[in-house]
Image (cartoon, rainbow, N blue to C red; front, top):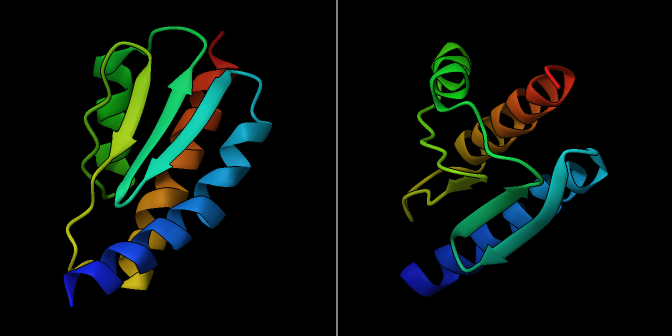
Length: 98
């Protein structure tokens, strides 16, 4: 039931990534289906951010001023929350590097 899974992922992304909007460095959060995008106000440091995500135990490949995730439709709720929490923590850390 992939459509139901996408709806569930989308709903979780809306709830979990919403808190990123409170970070000063975040321009906008967008969700479309199982895709979550956090647009930053400036370009990210790809090397630093990739290393931080790996230390968090997740694989996220940001580029330019976007940090986005496209989790597989089979992701569990706990795994998705681990991913979104890591995304928030790394962006929050990045904000302090200004």
